[in-house]
Image 1: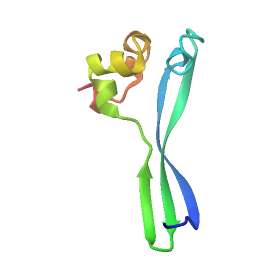
Image 2: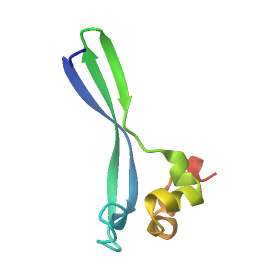
Image 3: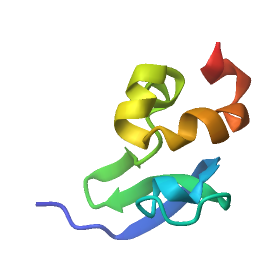
Image 4: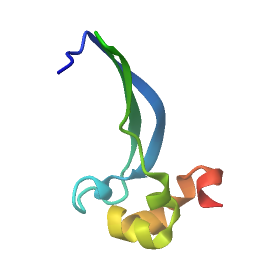
Length: 87
């Protein structure tokens, strides 16, 4: 098994959405900017890039958005998604 020598968090973007998505319907009307991260991990055997990011297909597809992010996102935060995702 490899051991990590260094780990670098890499900010790849942010997603703005209503707080109710993360707090099980608490915080209506409050918006948060969530970070989307990747990690570069250095091991004795080389580097590993681990993407812990956002699954944009689940945000762009209205059916998947309801299933994974709750109905709150459709009316409130979908206007804040990057244009490319909404096309």
